[in-house]
Image 1 (cartoon, rainbow, N blue to C red):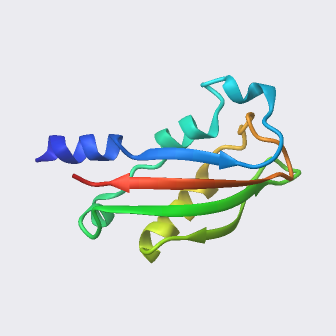
Image 2: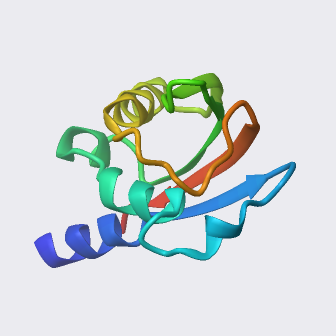
Amino acid sequence: MSKKIILAVLLISVSIISFGYTPKMASDDNCTLKNKLEKQLRLPDYLKKKSNTGTVKVEFLINENDVIEIQNISGKNDEIKEYIKTQFAKMDKDVCSLEKNTTYFIDINFKIL
């Protein structure tokens, strides 16, 4: 059972949809937001027990100080939305594949087996 939970957490998929200019550095896998989010977003046990599937949509930008500012977040589970908001705040400032002052949209899909 614990192997299934670990596998489920590892299967959290993140897809980024952005509008606007795609910078040249976006192809650097060590630098992309997708890779950072896959490492950062691991649902805690208390959230795994409450929901088994879902999508959280996040609209954000990188401000002049290289800090992620969430503009809007939507999804069905308020606890998961709050958790994702907290994890974005903990993310380091080195989001080198993104342009400052550009709005980005990301869908965070999760499925607990």
